[in-house]
Length: 67
Image 1 (tube, helix red, strand yellow):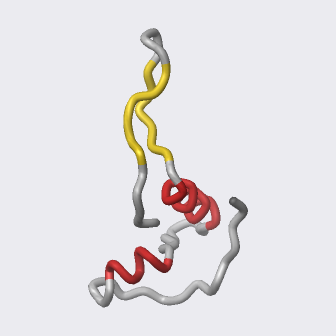
Image 2: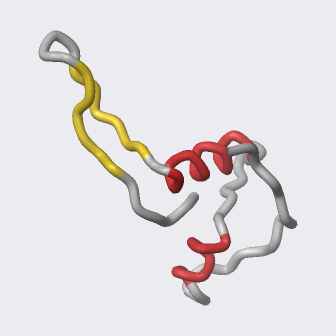
């Protein structure tokens, strides 16, 4: 799970439109999702800061992603 700016909208041609989202925040969210184990939700540091103490979490350690 990640928090940040993204661009959302329809992309494609008149014959075929797809709704999509683009941006660095979306890319990080996808990488966090791919790195999580079944039943696990990984949060970015920014999302953790936004949540504050409203949600109990535990550290999964630091990770590095490509891109």
